[in-house]
Length: 406
Image 1 (spheres, rainbow, N blue to C red):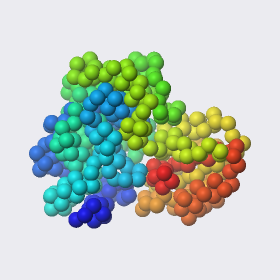
Image 2: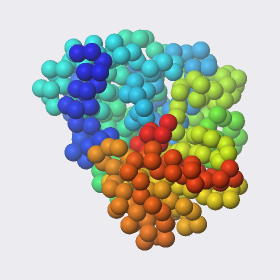
Image 3: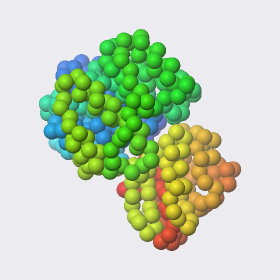
């Protein structure tokens, strides 16, 4: 198969959470262990940092990768989901995996995937681990897909485990309390491996402490330990916590004497994170007059911070291009949006996209008023037509809405 045929097979033959949701979710790592064995257990040869959390794990992963790249290392970066191109998920020093490598990997292992009914995500994890091992990376940043304990990435033994924060998201899989979700994410804490917690509260801290004691893992609460950070290319207000998490993680790496990371490498890594890692969609500016911002925040925990930052901007009128997926808890997120704004409701172009009429109807219950549009693009263009140069346009509600306008 050529690259287009390979992608088509991957997206259509393997169960994919990004498009299908619950039916593609795997509740254990049996398949991943089986795949790793089939590939010769490449994960055992990887030095890595394992990053989980409800929000901020993507930004944290990219910041870590950028700093280590500036320090002169070959850095593998595995993240999900992708916004525009599948190859975004697997990169070394900002260079995405080649089309040829993906084709060879799929063609070589296709029968195994089909015989063992592997999911899209399980296959992607195996691909990333084999690729990083063959390319002999110095260190790898591995972002958890969902949760932690049962995530496919949780077959690694990292140098440091990182949990950015806990919020209510994917509750149908991870539990509907902060404690339950914290327990799932604390599942990445390994025996005798230090763990960094980005943010905590009275519900989640006891969970983290108990798991760290059980695993004899030294635990560091970055929000208590780090006071000062450095400027970054990432402009979202929420990045302050991510930067503290990164600085604490880097401090541990330096204490382990495995990596040399200068202050200049940290400063440059923060300032050049988008340039170095090609990160997209985080308080991402698309225009100035009117000011246009898109952001991938998609749950109450993330949206609250982003919407607070929107309200701090100077503008005459506020315009929201808004779409969500069908498993989103609207009762939690819609009350966060300002009533004094014009809404352009749309449906992301994936099977999990929530019907735009349902979104409009639910939004109206919270006095969020606006018209529906047949596509994200139509909604975005309508907002740009209606907005004056002194207005502010925000596009978001879902990673998949943002992906369509980048």
